[in-house]
Length: 108
Image (cartoon, rainbow, N blue to C red):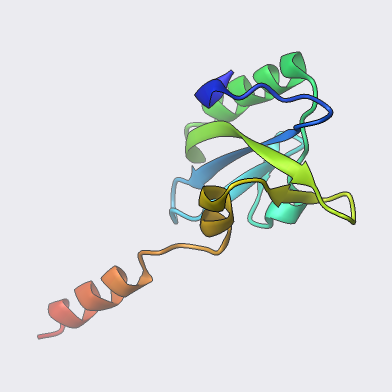
């Protein structure tokens, strides 16, 4: 299992990656990708999570850096981040300022 995390009913996980074209964070849902982390599929079974992670890694034409991360089930049953890093990733790309600076520099 990736990053030393093993999913279970008490500590489920989600699979996340970055969209290869845009760089945005995406989450796996039924073998496909969603930009909404609340729509991610929660994995509680190790074997199923491992197979899904292999499927995610095989989608190298769509995503990069796929990994399984701990999540928790929110009050509505949907996934929520269990750690700060994932909550931060969920808020969106942090490179917008760099893109703006590059755009301004190219128009000089």
